[in-house]
Length: 528
Ligand code: FAD
Image 1: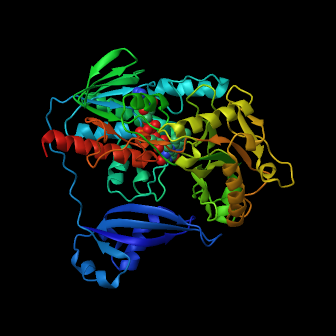
Image 2 (image 1 turned 180 degrees about the vertical axis):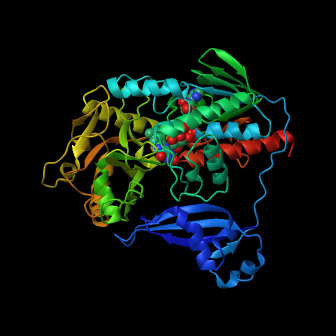
Image 3 (image 1 turned 90 degrees about the vertical axis):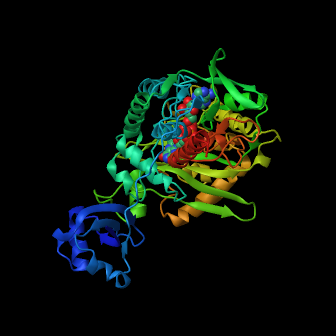
């Protein structure tokens, strides 16, 4: 039976092979008595710089539990946990036709989970398989020629495929463990199972996504790329088929809609079909890029030890008078700023890094909360128009060709000192007045927030930092309301899921939402 031991502390200089001896020493048992030794969690405590601690939780079992069980009361860091039974998925048979729209985390994990029950579906994806998509995206970054159907937002793997691949989730949902196990099983680094801040990196994520595709094909799924949902056909108030690419009709009884936050045409189609939609708050701002070595010095109190990861940060500031918050979002250590446009004539920034996080740059979005009342219209799609308007302003300020408007941080703050004006963003940046590419309430709150961030992270406000805009696709500006059975409140058989439905934000929570929908569908088909 496994024991769990918490708060084991090593320094960055120590090798992890010391851990079993450390535990054995603290518990007074011979190291050889510890069996099945496993790291369950690893985190970094950098609060007392430059003394950095690496903190572990481990599990192990003993041939003879009795002596340690008797000491549980006296050992605050020791715990005993019976091994969890593996999840069981009863086989479900059904003639109901399931279609999943979108192969982002929500759609893919809905599919993987349905496969566990022995169910198969048709998976339709407007973009291209990840291999072709990678070429299309590289071409966009190199030449500024956008493919509106195969880009950073659209294509196999979804929006996070060209990302840092942070696999953190605010909630401690137990389904998160299933997501990480699946990812590791399909080729993600095994340590994502225990790192306090797991991340996979865009390079590994792409291979994981294609391994998932092969698995689903083996399980009997039909996967169709270049296949865009363009209409929904209903019979007696329920989904009966869908139309793809404006022509072909596919029979469908249960429609899992996992189309993400950038499928603006899909929201428009839903509105035409009178599916209830509502406005949803999101956030918008700029991306800041610093030298990674500077962020390392700020966070670790000196140069980074080679065993430590590229340092990250998370900062937030709230103006209680205006009710606005400025905060960092989707920080990418050792990454690059990327162009994430999916529509002609709009500039969108985001961040991405490889598994090694080894570029000389650290970037993060700095964003401000945007409420439905800011959108300038009462209708459900007002937020989409708001996003599109400001993305177009950024496009104009960048001079076309998807160059992004940018400013040195000191210049944006009105501080003296002329500094760096270069960025990893491709196809390139153009110096611009960033007050023309965002509403005043956003630039104003960003300035207030950045002042505060400079106090928390000494050295953050520097001529070495560049701001690039605009960061507008932080989450969906629309929600597709669902009932307690995860079904649209207005259309039977429609299951809106993931970030585009307005019920998730990020890879993990979107994947978990997809799993929930699959469990609900399996239970419904089983007649539970
Ligand atoms: P998406 O991933 O958006 O997937 C939707 C899919 O549906 C797409 O593949 C799209 O092509 C397809 N689609 C859309 N419309 C249609 C249609 N009509 N017909 C057929 N197919 C359609 N999150 C993190 O947690 N960590 C990160 O490090 C991180 N970094 C990011 C970096 C970038 C550059 C971006 C863009 C996002 C990042 N995110 C990150 C956010 C994360 O990617 C999203 O939260 C997540 O992908 C949402 O999952 P989803 O499945 O709901 O939607």
